[in-house]
Image (tube, rainbow, N blue to C red; front, side):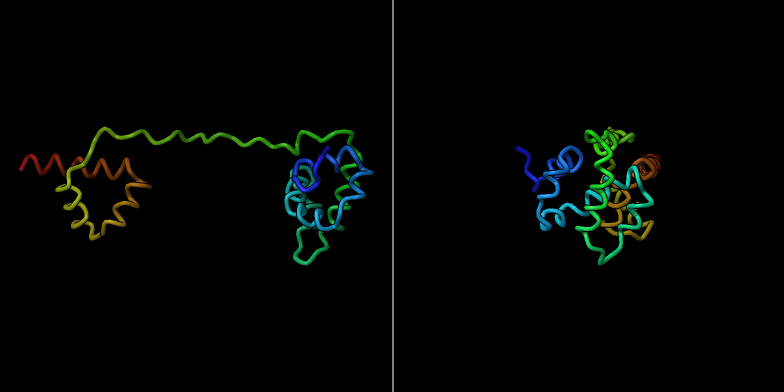
Amino acid sequence: MLDDTKLFDFIKIMFTRPGDYDKITNHNKKRHHFMINRFFAIKYPANASLFNINGINPNAVLDSWSLVARRFSKVPTWIYTKTKKSTVKNQEKSKYIPSEKAILFFMDKNEIGKREFKELETFAKKDLYESLKKIEDSMQVY
């Protein structure tokens, strides 16, 4: 038994059981309006854009999409979009650990605080650590 309160059950009803769709309450249609419009925007972006107006009747929008859904005999594959895994691998942990002395010198030289330093460490770790390594090397020479 499909539960029309669950999104993917609702989609299955919409595409495969038009008689059951007609019995769904307006409350449950409103509930799924946003996501159904997003799914249909994959295949029909222009139509979905026209349905994406504040104040539009969500029940009428879903009834319109159900007319489109009746053309299909099963749920189409474009409804179930796959997400891509991140192409950026987790940043490798650096074996280099900067000394406290180099960090304090860097912060003083660049007139930044601990918060800005942490942001640099988060967003530009490689460049930051290269600078800190140069500072440490120069400190050891002198």
